[in-house]
View 1 (cartoon, rainbow, N blue to C red):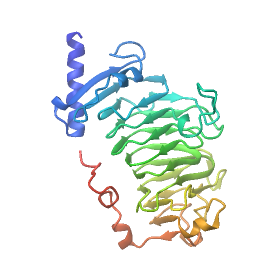
View 2 (cartoon, rainbow, N blue to C red; view 1 turned 90 degrees about the vertical axis):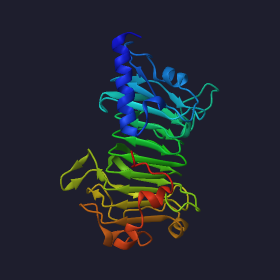
View 3 (tube, one colour; view 1 turned 135 degrees about the horizontal axis):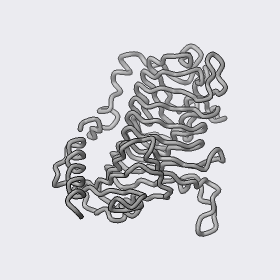
View 4 (cartoon, rainbow, N blue to C red; view 1 turned 45 degrees about the vertical axis):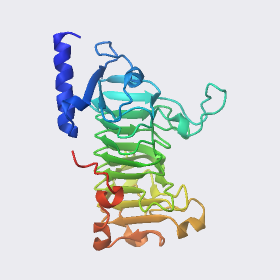
Length: 326
C-alpha cells in the first residue's frame, strides 16, 4: 500500500467512525473497485476477507460502478458496512428469479433468487443501489435480509415482484427508494421505514407482511411517499393496494404518508381469504394526498387516533435497539 492509499484508508476509517460512533480502532476500511484501483475488484472477494470478530466493524467502500454479482453476507461475519459514494452510480445487481435453475437443476424459488442475501447482524449500507434485473417475470428478489439490527440509509431497491424481502429480525430504512409492483416489500421482520419513497411500477400490492402472531409490529412507514412513474396527472394508469397479508397476522402501519392516486380507495386486500380480515393488523394515521381515503378504506383496517399513533415510536417498535442514534 503506498502513502496515498494509506491516507485514503485512514480518512475513510475516520469518516465511518464519525458517522457511526465508532473509534478508529474498531473500524477497518477496504475499497472495492471494478477497474482494479481498489483492494478488491469484486464485492464478494471483500466479503470473504471480512473478519468474524463481532466487536470490529468492517467497512467496504464500494466505488461507483455496476457490479454483477450474486452476494452473500454470511452469518459468521462481524458487523459489515457497504459505503457507496453515489446511489445512482453504485449498483449491485443480478438477474435470478424464482424459476431460475440452480446448480442442482431445481428452481431456486423466491428467497434464493435474491441478488444479495444478508445474514450477519448489524449490517449497514449507505448510498448503494440493490437491484434484481430479471424484470417483470414473477418473483425476483433484490435483497433478502435476515440481519438483526440492519440499517439502510439513502439506498435504492429496484425490482418488480418481491423486490425487498425483510425476512426476519429487525431492520431500519431511512431516505430509501423502493420500487416494484407486486408484494415488493414482504416478509416477517419488524421494519421501520422513515422518509422512504415507495414507487409502484404497475398495478399490484405494495406490502405482503407475514408478521408472526406474537410480534406486535411488522412494517411501519413514517413520513413516506407513495408514487408511480406511470401516474398521469388526474388519471392513474396503475392502481395498487397498500398491502395484503402473506400470513394471517400481517401487520402494517402508515404514519403521515403522502399517497398519490395510485393507491386504491379501499387500501387493503384480504388475499382472497375473508378469514384474514379477522386477524390482519392494518392501520393508518394522517395519510394525505389523492390516495388517502379514510372513509373508503376496508372496514377491517383501522384509522388511528393521535393518542394511539403517538404510542408507536422506534423505541416501542424496536425495544433496546436504537438505530437512529449515531
